[in-house]
Amino acid sequence: MNYPDIQNLVSQYGSPFYLIERGRFEDNFDALVKAFGTRYMPLNLAYSYKTNYTPYLCRLFRDKGGWAEVVSRMEYDLAIKVGCDPAKIIFNGPVKRSDDIAMALSNGSVVNLDSQPEIDAVLAYAAAHPDKTVPIGLRVNIGLSDAAGRSHIQNSLKVGRFGFDPHEIEEAGRKLAAQKNIKVVSLHGHTSTTDRSVWCFKAITETLVQIGRRFFADTIEYLNIGGGMFGVVPPEHRWCAMPSFDDYAEAVCGVLNADAWVQKRKPALVIEPGVAMVANAVSFITQVVSVKTVQGKVFVTVDGSAFNTKPTFHAINPPFAVISETKTSASPQTFDVVGSTCMEKDILLKDISAPLPKVGDFLRIDNVGAYTVVMTPPFINPAPVIVAKESDRIVCVRRRQTLEDVFAGYIFG
Image (cartoon, rainbow, N blue to C red; front, side, top):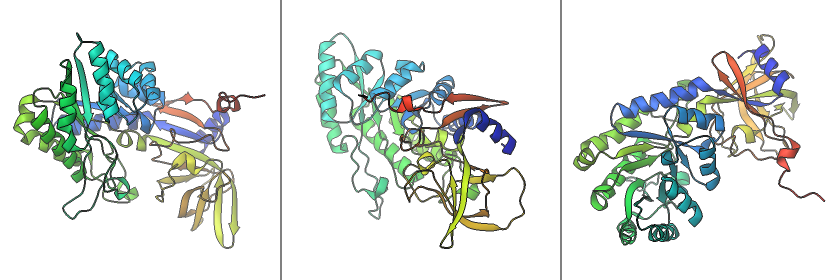
């Protein structure tokens, strides 16, 4: 997308804005299906709504035959609103109220329990519906410490907080089995990791297989390894070793294909891609409003914010391009790209080397599809427009947020 293209969009929608590349999103879906589905079947992909719940993307995933993975009643209601089959909704998360659980079970959704109060809610529901079989899932707390004792759980935590301790799974199953119409059909092992490594997903798969074979051999229908895999990142922009979809699939499906119980039972492998689906499918376009030097440091200020590109304020510079009206032969300079808020740490790109942009130029920052749209607060500025590129046309999929949108829930006067 060149300068006139962007200028045309800005004249219609303003700056900044997000750009969804529909083709990339669909290509990611197809690549995951090819990598895993050619090695093991049945396979279900369930899109992680929390990663980016733009309805346009949720519908695309549904239209490709995918399921929805939600972690709140809001996300569940969204999945219904965009037309998902309730039987193809997986309801995860640590806070599911009794009425949420009852609603999801009544709809035939897959509910993966996280705690004893949720077991109690299911027992109450099953007792109130004695003539109905109640399929249920259990989330397993996966320990990801390697042979050297190093934890691979997010932030190097020794113990993660989600799911049931593996040593308590048998007891959880026994409590559920006390109500004769309850059947444990799903084991869920999503674990956020430090490195998204193949080893982590192999360990998750092995743990679920062992628990399924030992305690629920005759009832398991789904082995859900969760999400968190790396998506597609060009080699020049990789900041660490990044496995391919084939690398993940070879390890995970290798475990499944080597196990006699799995081969006999053939539970569906469930993957909940978020980052792998959407990260590289979304870019952020923002315009330069000033360029200045302070004590020898060059700052390029844009009308967007780091909240729009990396709301967790991580230190990694995503791929980017400077888009100018005219070509430049200027030598690269080192500068920071800083945002429109009043926070010193609002830095979109730090210590980058490129020809210095001019006021009015645009920056395209790529790989910003994950956890940006859903985590951008109404802080100082309203949320920007989202447009989608579909072949040879651009469609608006979210208008720019207004004052009325931001303050609709507040009481004035």
